[in-house]
Length: 63
Image 1 (tube, rainbow, N blue to C red):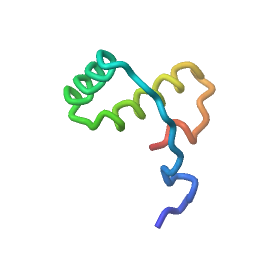
Image 2 (tube, rainbow, N blue to C red):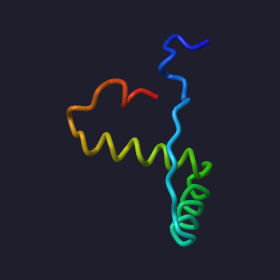
Image 3 (tube, rainbow, N blue to C red):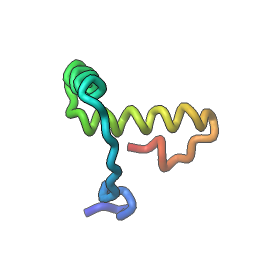
Image 4 (cartoon, rainbow, N blue to C red):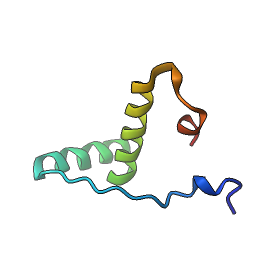
């Protein structure tokens, strides 16, 4: 069980890529040894944290 039920990854988002973008993402994920969706999730969260700079809430930085 989860100690914090808000940590369950149940929220979805849809994003669309053209064939070239999708091939790039798949190649980058394969290079990292990850699945494309997991790679994109990590990439988006890292970018969000970078944009927030020093004001990152603990909820975003915890995995």
